Each structure stands twice: as structure tokens, then as C-alpha cells.
Image (cartoon, rainbow, N blue to C red):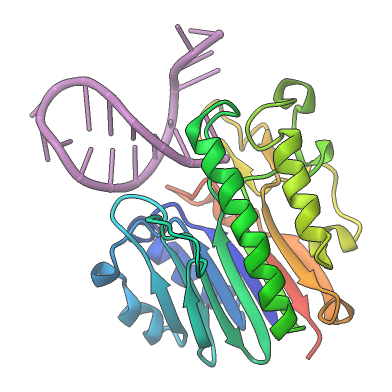
Length: 255
DNA sequence: ATGACTCCCAGTGGGAGA
């Protein structure tokens, strides 16, 4: 079974590309970020017609997440219980015995901004939530747009990005703290091509020049780790007309 | 180079993203 994450940057715009991608890449489940749709406008009928059950949680203009799965998700939770948040960023559900957490981490804008303070508080709350979920569900995956480049090798120009948003020591410490819960970065379990990114700026011909960041991640629990067979970033959708600025990340699990 | 592009809501511009 494959699991995937994709920041689609507006599902209203990207729905045809999502359906095309799913037709070519059947998955057991996929989490989406930045749907940018209120719940009443979510295109569930089209997704269901493609053979996927879907749970969604959105808002106007920004954020918004969804969990698509072949068999449907059970015990779905929206956002982080106990963390008051007006932003729709997290959706969790159990799919085929795996606890799937799909998350759109805050961007943070700049290290000295209020949005960075919010990002840190959100990360603290997420970590507590994941810890509790892990205690109840040993087979767990945390995937989504983390808006954190964990290491310098995840950045096309680490000197220019040093200390910048996505690369600050505080954000990287938060990523390590998630690993400290007993999670493993599935992508780094395997030899990967150098300069592997999951996001490329729309500007500056960044994709053509392969100037990007690896900020979309799939973390797996200790119990799930032995089942991980492969993990890769699919750059093909970034070559579409009107692409998302993010590429899907896919993990393959043994049955 | 405080930019560049894309999306959204707005409303003939501006915020946000990363």
C-alpha cells in the first residue's frame, strides 16, 4: 500500500491534476494541504467518483486539509484537540490499521514575526498530540507540508538560507523533537538523488534550475518502519501547466 | 534587488505563501 502527501495550493484549481495523478498513482491514502476551500465547496463528489472516500476540513482563502482513502477513514479528528486554532491545518484518521495524521504546518513568515511565534506554539501542540496518538496507535504516519527543511542538504543554497524561515535552529529543533517521539523520516531511510526537493518557488525559473527545498515529509512510527519499502518525491506534477509549487511525496508500505 | 509567480478576495490593488 502507498501513502502520499501533496500540498495542492488550491484544490479548486488543482482538482483535475489531483484526479489525473490518482489515476496514474493509486494510493491507499493521500493527505492534501492548502485546499483553500470552505467545507461546503469541497469537491467530494468528484473525489468519491474516482474511488476515494474523503474527509475534509477547510476555511475560506487559506489552509484547509483533506484525507482521501480507498476504504475510508475511521475516528477522524480535525485540528489539534485542546489547541484553540482558527486555522484548518490538521486532519487525522485511521486507515487500514494505520493512524494517518495529515498536517499543514504554519509557514512562519519570518523568524521575528508573530507568525513565527504561532508556528512554535503550534509545533509544541502538534508534538503533544502526536505523542498521545502514538500511545494509542503504534502504527502511525505523520505526513504533510512541514514548512521545515530539516538539514542543509534539504536546501538548494544553505548559505543563503541560513537562519531564514524554514531553516532556523528553532524549526529544525522542532523537527528533531518529532523524531524524538520515535518517528523516522521515511525519505532518508533510502539512498536518494542529491538535490531532492519537494517545493520550488514559482519565481525565478526555480523549478527549471532545480532550486528548491525539501519541506514535505513523511514520518513513520517505530512499529511501521519495518514495513517501509520505498519513499520518493514525484516531480512530474510540477511540470504540469499551472502546477502546484509542491510535489507529492509517496511512501510504499509492505502489506 | 525590499523583485520575480500564483492564488485569493477584492474590485482596477494587496496579503500570503515559502
